[in-house]
Image (tube, rainbow, N blue to C red; front, side, top):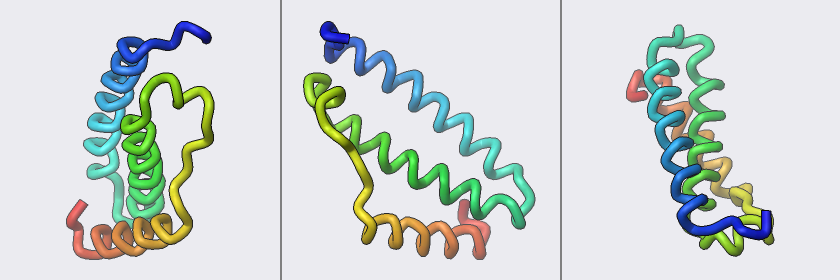
Length: 88
């Protein structure tokens, strides 16, 4: 994909953003026993998606994007608290 433009990236991001919105609606309907783990995965991948959104299209295909381990721990703690108090 040598012709991966900013317009292409924005179209893909819009589609992914819509998928995340729909996923959160479904996650909220899950039983509390399974909701926590699914929500944690959602939060992690949404955070990763946001990092990719911040990159220009020219860099998306060229570099590795990751969530730092310290941030993963914070996301996990935040997800546990939100699930325990039904704040999702």
